[in-house]
Image (tube, rainbow, N blue to C red; front, top):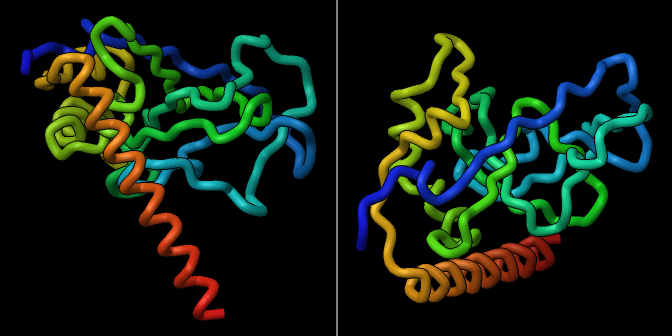
Length: 182
């Protein structure tokens, strides 16, 4: 294990400020919002509450499947620093209160980073450094200052795969339970 600041292993890019007059109830691309994150981490669909964008925008703000994003505004308790993996190609737009995380893959595995942001240590550091009293905010610079201990890349990959497998089994069991209840 080695101790690093996240800024040594990843970068965070702010989303674009999409203009409200071009929001719509239907369209091709939906804006990512803090509502797309579970407080403990993971992608949450905004079923029925999506906001679509109908004007032109810089192509670099169109998300791709597997992009790692982070909630940089806490609109619900525990949301600040929550991460999610974008589930579909070319459907979601990288909005301003969301950070796009790019890992230096020679130091930090993206899936390991996804789970790393779910840890109590990372969340507490982000909470302590946040600005705002009622609605808390973080920034790329504050994320970069978070200190973590990370294993070697091989171990990171093994840990991330194990956790993804467990998450998959939990999801399958919840689906089975929902079907049985119906």
